[in-house]
Image 1 (cartoon, rainbow, N blue to C red):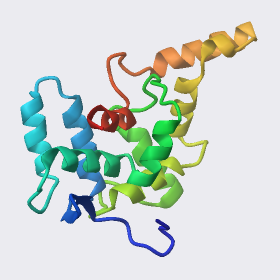
Image 2: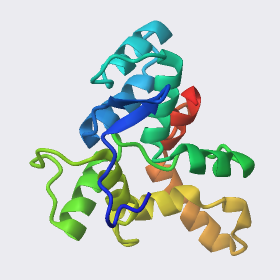
Image 3: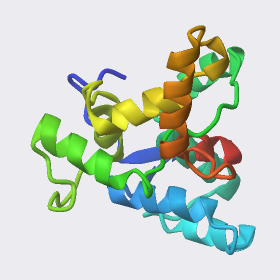
Length: 186
């Protein structure tokens, strides 16, 4: 798939049938929040997942797997490629809910896009723009500092400085990163 000349996908394929899906970025941020909600049963979560399919689904298990690939911006082809590599679980680096002010301001600064005023943006477009935010935006700085393994920092003063920053911006321990959620159902 080459998005320079192909449109963003608005469907997934299940048992050889194209099933239209919801594609707005807000809906997927809601979905990721819902999947982290411990108060919802697995059955409730599956019922909510079904609302993302705009057509009848012939195979619910396959539909959920394909929706998770869509969320992760993967296709069957690159799913197999990534499965051959190692998927290390890492600590969460950002949260759409906790880091909202920094994501919002990054989009406004870099792209002049007000995420609150935007009527529609495809999930993949949002993710690409999010990933492409300037390294000096607050959200990218937070992600960078959260990702530093303090044990690899040799200088004592630098380690102390980074530890202080990490402490100030840390996310709750039990929180899965928003990118890891899709892996739960694949």
